Image (cartoon, rainbow, N blue to C red; front, side, top):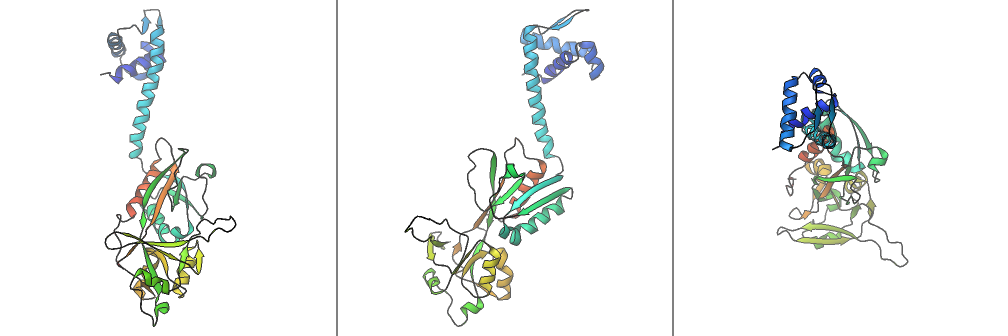
Length: 313
């Protein structure tokens, strides 16, 4: 196997123009340098350096071998830097963009916790729902609620985890009425919906459908269509409407758990598992993420519960 020390000492001798100069600069004895270069030439069965008491010059093959050695040693140094970065303490600034709703009910506390763990990190946080151009707008990290493929290879997408949801209604809406006993019973109540499905603008196109997706105790997928009174991309607006008794809605567990505990909201059909709201991290596809980006990604991933680990209400 090739001894990288032979390559390293050969490069030092060439870079400094001779054995004596390389010995003075590196602190390695001239005899040691000469021994490594001689061993390298013996293994290669080629003369790399013409050397006499008055002359030092590379052979033609030695010049080409020197150029290739530079490439090899640079690759070795790059590999070492990747390992060294794993031991670096996260520091410096990270620019993050996150949707409004998830930031309010979940990610604001996670980001604060991350900053508490790594006191040398600065976070510049932008709160917006529109899709941003990470590279063009100078962001290091985006949190999204979808995993749209990145065909150009400029970005990397990683799943962070999922936020369990629950179907809730206000106690006032259910006052004097029996709570739904089956999915079909949901049609007896007004509904509310998060998000805006794509609208087809062609003449005569049907209205966009709104659906809730559940899994029953056997894991079978059940889909229920509904016509919501309110459609919004604001979790806060949806939460307020549910609390005021305007209808049923699927909301993140993190957002409604205090209302459920206080009796202001009631969880409906607890034996059915609503679809989960998955979150993804997006960041530029560099050769190796910075220690800060990597630490932030690991911290957020660890913060989410294991799949299907539904919290108790």
